Image 1 (tube, helix red, strand yellow):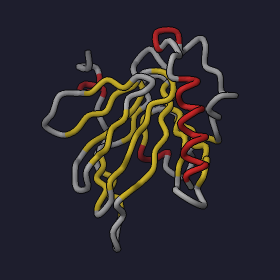
Image 2: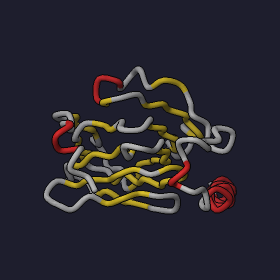
Image 3: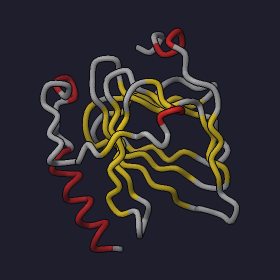
Length: 157
C-alpha cells in the first residue's frame, strides 16, 4: 500500500501544474484515464461522468471525470469519510450551508461522515478527481438526494 501511495503521489505531483484555464482543450486522458461512462450511477448525475477504478481491490481509489457543467446530486456518506483529490481541470465542492470551494489540481477535500454535499465540474472545464473512502465503519452507506438545480449551479462564481 505504501508503494502504491508513493507512486500515486509522484504521478499527482507530475500533473499538478496543469493549467486549469485550458483544461477543456488540453485534457490528457493518458495521465489520468477518462474511464468508462458512469452508467451505474448516471441517475445521480446531471451531465456525463466517467469512472476509472485505479486500485479498487485495495483502497477503492477511483478517478472520476466530469464533463463541463456535470455534477452529482446532493448526497451523504454515512459512517465513512470521503476524500477528493483534484488531479485535472477545475470543479466545485459544495457543502450544505457553506460557501462553494473551488477545486484545482492539488486541492484535497476530506468530507466528514453525515455531511450533505455535492461536487462537479466548472461550467467551462472538464474536472477529474480521485476519490476514496477512509475511516469506514461497519454499516457504511451512501444516500443519494435531490439533484443540484441549474438555478443553484449557475450561482457559482
